[in-house]
Structures are given as C-alpha cells and as structure tokens.
Image (cartoon, rainbow, N blue to C red; front, side, top):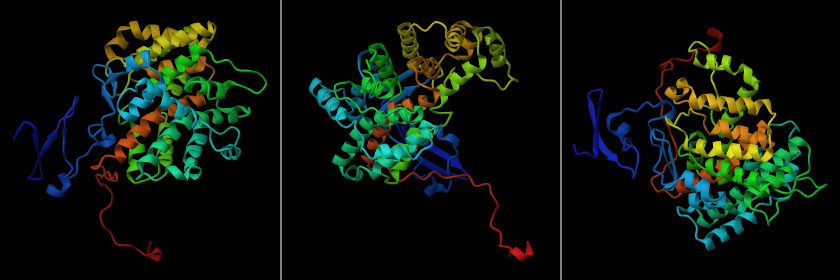
Length: 429
C-alpha cells in the first residue's frame, strides 16, 4: 500500500481505501464504501473520530490552542476586526475590501427590520417563556414570512436568506428579551453599527434617549466574533444534517438553535454562572475547590477546561481581557458573584492541580461574568450565543449546499435489540 492508502481487516475480509489529506490537521480514512465492500459499519458514538464533511471554514487544533477562521487566527480578528467583517470572511472566504465592507454593512443594516406581523407572533407566548423557546419558534416561522428566499437551489435566494438571517437574528433576540421583561419592542436604527444597534434594541425605552456605551459595544462585538463559528460542533452538525434533507435555511437555523439550547453546548456559560451562585461567597471557595479535587464527589467546576482544547482556549485569553475591561468600565466592585469569579480565576491560574489537569478558565466562564455585568439575565446568554453563531451556521449550510459530494445525512447503528420474533395476539398475551 502507498502512504496515502489504508487497509481495514475484519471478519476475514479486507477493505482497502484511500487516505485523504487536509491542508492542515489530521488526515482521514475514506470509509464511504466500507459497508458496500465488506458489509460492516464503523462504531463511533458522538462521531468524535469521524469527519462528516469536507470544509474550508474553520480549523481547530485543541492540543496547542489554535482557532482559525478561513486561516486567520481568532486573536487577530477579535483584536483588529469587527463582527460584520468576520461574517463576510466566514461567508465568502476572504476579508472584504473597504468597498465590499461598506456594501456588506449597508445590506445587513437594512435587513434588520422584521415583518410587522412578527410582533403579534410573540404575543402568543407566555410572558415567562424561556427566550430560547421563543427563538426556536420565531426563527422557524421566518420561512412563513419570507417565501422569496427559501428555494435552496437558487444562489440568489441563498444569498438573500443569508443576509436576512444575520441581520434579523439580533432583532428577534432583542424582541424576545423585551417580551420577557414586559417592555415595548424597539425598532432598529440604521445609523448604528450591528452590536450597538442590538444593545439599543435590548435596553432602550421610549421614555428617554439611550446612549450606547462604546466599551460595552466593543466587548459584545468581540464576544460575537469569538462565538461566530467553531467547526463541526453539535449545533453546526445539526444545521448541516437538517440542510442535507433540503429543508429551507430558516428551518435549518431553528434546528441549530434548538440544539444549542442544551446545557452541554450553548448553556455552558449559564451553568458556570449558576455554579458561582451556588458557591455564593469568596470564603466558601476552599470547600468547593476541595470537592472539585475529590474524585468521589460528583461536584464539578463549570467553566474550566474544554472538550476540544486540551491546552488553553485561545478565545478565553481574549475574553479574560474583555471581562476586566467591562468590569472596570462599569465600576463593579461589590458584586459577590463577580468576587467569587475573580478569586476562582486567580486560583485556577496558579494552583498546581488546575495547571497539571489543564483546567484553565474557558470562554464560558468569562462570557457569563461579562454578560451578567452588562445586565443580561442568564436566560439570555444562549440567545446571544445564537446571534453570534448564526453566521457560522449559515456559512456551513451554504458550503454544504454547494458541495456536490454531499448527500442526505444517514448515520447507521449497532443494533442490539431483539431478533426477529412472531406476533402474539392480544388474547394470548
């Protein structure tokens, strides 16, 4: 066999196939014809060792802590760019020229208004409905309002749907927030940038003029950049799987939002904040640290370590600085939860146990603190994640639609249930 081939032997049968090389990262063994040739499947719960697609969008090296969008390090994009520039990069593969950036910003800004009848849609929910449940329903309902951008075979309609999703998501999210707090919806304002517009729609009231704090706007913009895409995670895979059936883009993104809602995925920063609330005060930290180190104790510190990043999460370094900028800007000094968070951060960065286990604070730890300081309730944390991740979902969906090798997703299984048996009439059971 050549260096670019592989052989799999099982049940006295041999399967020879090719090895595909990526531009960077692990190579993959092509097993697409494995079942046809030797009648066997591979077994990979959670698909942790399976490449489900070929992609040119995002690359992660968890061992050394690298995250690249289209080849650009996340640190550079977060430091020097803005969110809409990152959106353009993820969608089109290159950073925009000044003219392209101006045109893209213009188109996104003028798509932010949602159909007026959407406001009535919100009134059908209970006032205490979780904002994520509202988002799943409202995003899915967009296909009922925008029929002219649901034909996935038309490149022009795919482009319009992409613009609409990126533009309207913050408006829908702000409406979900306003509905839960009982305040009137605020229309977007075209003179503001993407993130400033979102903050105004969340926090402005008709009674007085709202002035956007540029430090908070820049912090939230950076949060959006850091969360814009993250390779083939659970929600992105969900969007691709839904899209492989030919579903319209609004339905696919709604599916991604539903998956993101899970506490093991998008709800991690909310879980981290709840943990801080459980600890309560700084003097209780030692006992929780001791519990975290005890293998027999089920307690786990949330917001530390990462499934993918075995070293430091590169996004966390940026979020750490952003968190302290926000706290300094707001002058928050007497919040017990933030005191607990800062002390936990200090311990994690200096305690030998955390260093050896590589349990560094991750992006969820810092983003939860930052969003709380900015005034968002914990129920909105995952909604903000969805606003940011929409462009990643759209870019991945668009790439999948345009990939001629993609087929409808159809995972297989290892069946361990009953073998064939005869039906027994009810009277004899």
